[in-house]
Length: 89
Image 1 (cartoon, rainbow, N blue to C red):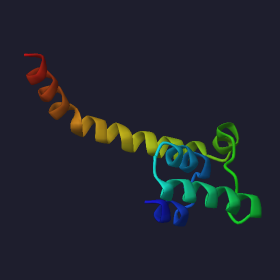
Image 2 (image 1 turned 90 degrees about the vertical axis):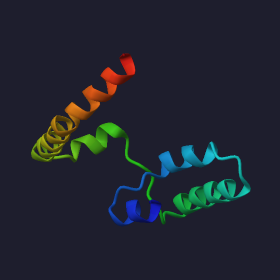
Image 3 (image 1 turned 180 degrees about the horizontal axis):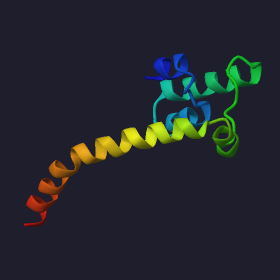
Image 4 (image 1 turned 90 degrees about the horizontal axis):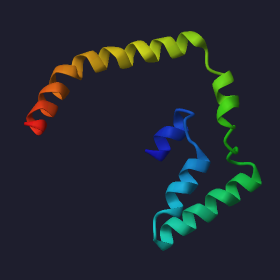
């Protein structure tokens, strides 16, 4: 998943470090240290603040994603409603 995120330009080093901090293993500690060292060396860029990332997003991209989510929500609505009704009964 991490390699795919890096290829797609979606890798978030800060989020990855937070995930690694919650993993109580020596391997996670080594990976966290390696990630920090790569950032300090300039081989992996530090994440932009969320407000800065949002400025780079085009409104039409947001609209397309929203339409896709809306379509998926409409598709799943009957199944989710049925499931919730069964649980509530």
